[in-house]
Image (cartoon, rainbow, N blue to C red; front, side, top):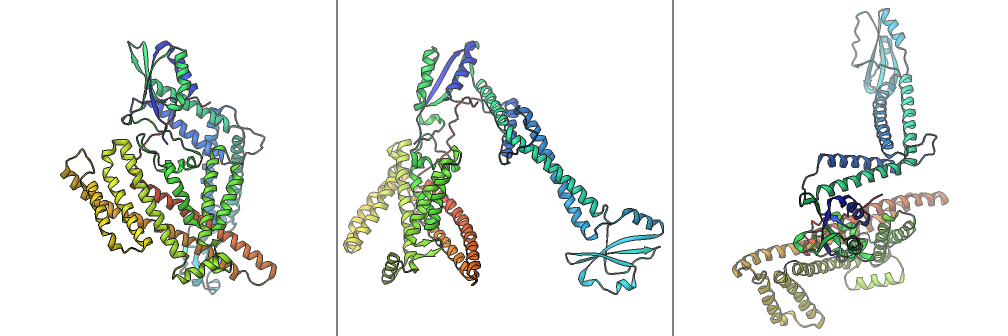
Length: 605
């Protein structure tokens, strides 16, 4: 759900304003209303500084905290500059090393040589020239015909030198190349030196990661706080010849008590008004334990507008089911659930919701693995397990199999989510604009649910469908009037009819396309099971017959293969249900989004 907001307007005497801002920051519940569209150059520079700090913190956070003699600085600003310098040095060293490695690869075929010797020979009229030729074109008789010496072979090329006396040129089908500027030993020496420099810089960075990381974070927080204060001052209106300061902000209903206590205790004049839909206040979501874990997924797309429904608790159960459908392996589900439970106690507080989400996804994967009969790629319906064997026989007698049933189950789940989305759309329209705007959507709900009910009643009761035509005609008549003529009671009926026809075309084609999109659930589940089965077959066929060695080989193939399958299929199971949520479900639910995050003006450190 979306937490109701209240708009607070504060009137503060100018001499007390700084103290007032400090107390408001301590309470930390007011989302300031920004009245200036642009920001000053000073604020923009601080934002750039914050980005630099975030980049450095992220860089240091990935490093191992080394125990070295040289420690980082306790001064966050000084440590930041030192780390930035070290990062620049590290990048330069790596660039030098890359160029040196390229030069070494070119010089390696020639090995070590003495530049002094080459220069002495040149003084005697003997010039050393360097050649390369494909090994297929190199001829042994060249050694007898010309003063050449083979130096080495590499990558299908023969490298040799030719001792030229006077102006005599070598007439061979070979390519003369530029002589190396430095011998291999010299290049290896510089490479070792650069590698030592890189090691030294890394040790210094590890020292900073161990001691200076928190100081740099604190420095970043201090800049962020100064930006917040600066923005608060920029968005303050000066009244009564600049004697009174006017500040406005949004406060969640459930958090306003501490603020109002402070205001009334200190006799600060304020006005609090409950937010209207047209005000577009910031959005703060509040969901129960299960749905809260899915807020992070919804925010990947967009927050709802303040006037909309929060769809998080409504798409969460479907997302869990769809993920399990796509991955659909009981063994993988057990691994995910157990791993989530074990890691939940070790990860940071911010990641505990992620572990909880993975746990639920693992349970769903296990459930659909049991339904589809797949355990680490083993098709249980092909085994002699009692339940699966009996079900396989029954399916065969009825001319079907588990895959066909899963295909229809995917369409059924899709149909349920589409209709559920339309119901939420009607509620959303009623909430935002009134029930008169929801009549057309209600007409589609009546048509779809009524048609399915009539068809289902005919199938269950063995009454011929043709006998129920009168009920169907009544249903079409009622829903048709709602869809074509009453879709907006505040518009002209002829305009409603024209727009109703257009909406009918879009709905018919859209619902059909949306329904077919849910087939991907079945397709991904099948592909995951097949890939797991393939790795099992490879493990058996490639393990050989040596007792202990075959078990080791089989284990390695199974671990690597199922690891790859779990990663790839898990990625697909994460992305595609999200697509079904953000495209098909959100569209049918009438979700528009565009809400802005609730970010209170508060102290960070």
